[in-house]
Length: 338
Image 1: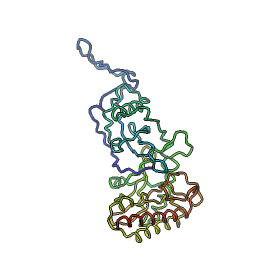
Image 2 (image 1 turned 180 degrees about the vertical axis):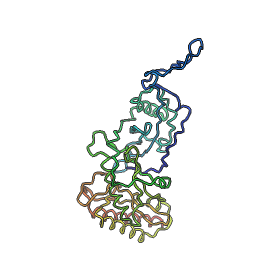
Image 3 (image 1 turned 45 degrees about the horizontal axis):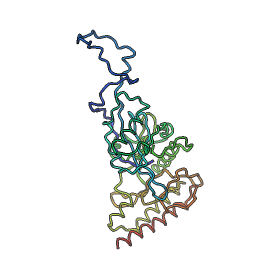
Image 4 (image 1 turned 90 degrees about the horizontal axis):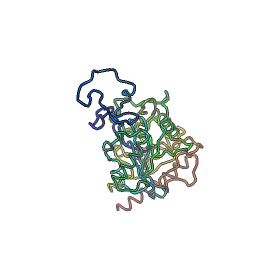
């Protein structure tokens, strides 16, 4: 799952374009109340055919990311597009695009009149190619079965309190990592992370992110909700402002030891999985690589040079090795500032 802050809204406000009426089968609109000589017909109950009218689909970009290989070499820009918050498809563009331009496209500009539901991804890809002047061959789209990505909510998992949603950081389920036909479905990762966070919520620690619960839609976990933090450790060091590295590393180590005492291995400690709170204290986030000791690590993408090569199972060694690399990373930044 990739992080993205957004306020989820139940607003039903629609643009004039979205309020048009179209047929499910894409047939052109006919006005049965006005004849060719403008005489008005009497009102009657709609036929089954007329009852096929539906509003135009509403598209929304939910998450987007620039994907790189383990050597940080560009692979593609990827995003998830939701259709009426009910169906989703992933788009991947192998040509370089500014991520902000990709994220901020006004999808209401796409004319979906007479477009069948299954043809929407193709229409979106055509719109994207025309807007950015890129080859259609560089654009790949594919549908994402929700059951492969969004696990069913279980009764032992906390649902985020509605009154807290405005103040939470939503870690949305990352559809962009979905691979068609892959047996390691993302829903298993999401559920495992939710259970790890549930345990951490019941056993809080100042160096562990505050977890508020799952955001559930139609019985499915769509996001995990955390306290909102200022910036990543990477960004904090990039400011060049002095930071007590010794105190910072001790706080991170304390958080790691707390997780180990609960039987949890983080397995992905790096400058981006540490954030800073309002008091400039480090906090551990990103528990989607978290396992019990000896369990297989399913999510295999880590920050370069922050993990033991060929590590396949959860172990305290993974976290202490990463902590040592983090110390070297921070030391390098201190020398650069001096």
